Length: 483
Image 1 (cartoon, one colour):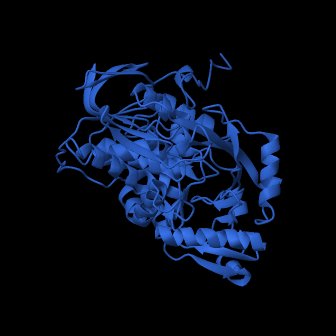
Image 2 (cartoon, one colour):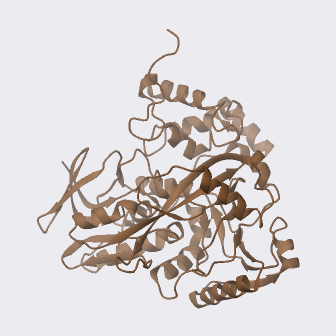
């Protein structure tokens, strides 16, 4: 049995941010995650926007943390070596109703302290984003784009280098307390801890119930996406959103990713399945119809992939009204911090929420600063983004930089090897993909996936039957095709 000062349940973006923030203190910290890597849930299934904070109720935890997280992100991106661009965002409209709805959100944003919001005309819109269609727009210069998976990995690796222990394939099955420690039963053994942090995302109500904090209801708002080839993103600089509807939500939008693809989506409909990530012809057709009026490259020749994500929103069980984030410590569970309903803008809010978790702990516990804490983490160098001179130097130093493993994304064997030997000890094909972008190009792994699996076999000295794609039991091979 392993014993810790703090156990964080869930290795999504918020759980990893909490782990990193806690590693600033002299604590024995563990993160329990049911999957085989970080960001295998909804932290990886979203648009990758750094939100400015103009859609959230003034004074709400969502609004406060979104603005706080947005303003600090340039520094955070430098510390963690994650790709980020403050791209801005345009919210376009065509009708008087659109104009009034946009003005409403401009007013909300100003109340929340969002900087630089302005209404622009058609000519100004064309200058900011030539690919956008609209008669007018609200321009939000503080909005940005990032890779949510890379960000979560960076938070986790930085936490790990500061002493945090990650236990994957460890689903929490039960919680008991003797008022001094929690006994946490998982499918992979038992651990004890003085503190428990519930950051279980879509399963947060389940863990909350285990803690004795009952009554919370979440509802899954599912959204589907198309991923467009980088050719569709040529010239697109700024995410393009439609004017909010009467209920305050946004319909399908077109977002340039930090790597140059375009995401079209999401739509929104209710799902009961916790991990219902299937996509449907009906909803994908709706994406094309809704997005074509404001972005002109939503065409079949650019489609390379589809995916879905689910926003598990906390709702009033009687009215169905969406509620604010919950971040609480209760006297009847004093050594537990409970986070429920953390959905969008969870990526933007992750570190501000993490700091508030620490503040809640400090209300009853004296935390001693860790003098050895280092906020900096170095990611895998992307060969494709270097200058010719830099590439030549790397190849001279390590010839494996001269061998391409993934042609679409120009990922080298040297990068694949670094990913295989990542600090968290993740050895799945999807883990390599998420760290290098190999298999994410036009052919979606048709060329490189077999090469990656062979490198995993050779580096780890395992058989082909032991190579996993992403989840437990997701075996790549059942045996050899030829004897």
